[in-house]
Amino acid sequence: MNRLAQRMARAIEMDGPLSIAAFMTMASHDRKDGFYASRESIGAHGAFITAPEISQIFGELLGLWCVQSWRDQGSPTPARLVELGPGRGTLIKDALRAARIAPDFLAGLEVVLMEASPAFEAVQREQLRDAPIAARWVSQWDQIAGDRPLFLLANEFLDALPVRQFVMTEHGWCERMVVVNAASDLAFALAPIPSPLDVPAERGPAEPGAVYEISPAAQGLVEEASRAIAAYGGAALFIDYGHEGSGYGDTLQAVSRHKQAGILDAPGKSDLSAHVDFSALASVASDACARAYGPIGQGAFLRALGIDTRGTNLAEHNPGCADGIGAAIDRLTGKREMGVLFKAFAILPGGAPPPPGF
Ligand code: SAH
Image (cartoon, rainbow, N blue to C red):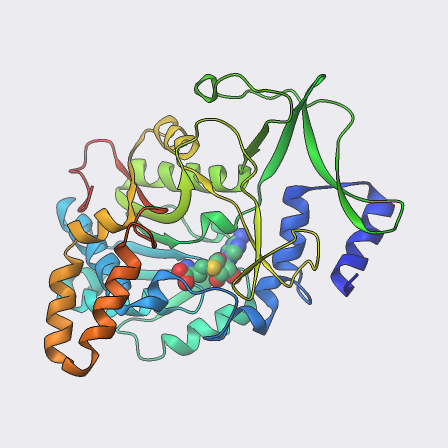
């Protein structure tokens, strides 16, 4: 057992089993030993490679998506651009550079980065040293005022938020918990008393053993963003690995050094994520009086935004890199790569024109 697992075991002995969500929060964000606090997850050879790291075109197109959505809504000033979970800061750096073609957008803009990890925040500050406008950092949503149009970007952010899991038993839905077993290891166990759950009817009947996953954190955040957008205007774009919420299944996974790892094996040493349930988020958005678009495949979305033209252009200016640029575009858009599994999902005010790419 590593140091964080030992602390979890002590917490369980004192306070009782941890929900999967509480386990994920500790494993991801423990100040000393959490995954996002560690240097290991950060460097170019870190545990994950994300779309903005594959090509600068990704962040550029997302920046232009914000500019176009802003124009479509009458160029409201002052506006706020927020990125959730900016990782190494590459996406926002590329987005702001591309947005230089719209000085009117940048002029009144407040840029806010929401980042829970001080280690990642330090990397982002370094990346943005020469950015066209200064950014402000916050560590949680309630530090972002809801008083003006909100343009929001989040890539592979929602999938990092904690989920709760419930398993169908003969008594009903019982929550999956983390306990300490007889061998003193962390182990999964089901809560003995079922939870009253309101499972959407479109999921269909649940067989014994079926797993129902929810992310109250993702739903809470999308609800807040939707309310702000419905009230003040703006547009949110989420890109993530996810599904459209039919059936049941356990999607929680741990990845360590690009390989699948056991969820409980070495907490804090692997990247925990779960598929995003876009149907649940779409209904949260519409309950908050906003309109949801998508999800559509990342490949189709990026192509509609002109990734191929931008790639050709970039290659003409950097002939030595043409092959690399083509390969990066294939990786972002290819059916067997990130083009279909990753999906784009947007939220806009009810009456606004549809966002680019949807
Ligand atoms: N968007 C980036 C990084 C994705 S990794 C990219 O595409 O490369 C997830 C990011 O979200 C990390 O920066 C992590 O520290 C941050 N994060 C995870 N949970 C968070 C939370 N609850 N609040 C704020 N930031 C969080």
